[in-house]
Image (cartoon, rainbow, N blue to C red; front, side, top):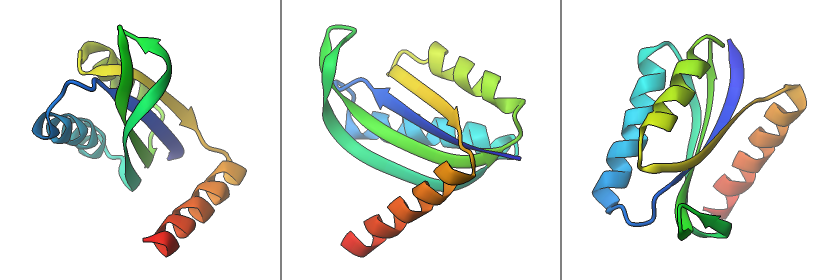
Length: 112
């Protein structure tokens, strides 16, 4: 099992219900194929550095999960097929990135 982190940007014209459905769809995709969710974060509506699909903002979400490497190709294909997704990036985390992510989550817990 590899450790991954995916950040994706949703179209800003979506309703709150549509956003929840989309996030749930991708979480269900992962868990149904044997992935374990480590962390989910909703970063909210953010201004983009440059326009994507003529939009100046988007809803950011982050998934941190462990999964077999074979499911990532299918996972990213689902992102490409979904018109609600403007951009996505999946990275494999090494031991240093994993420890950094744990420290970041701890800081978020302290602030909350």
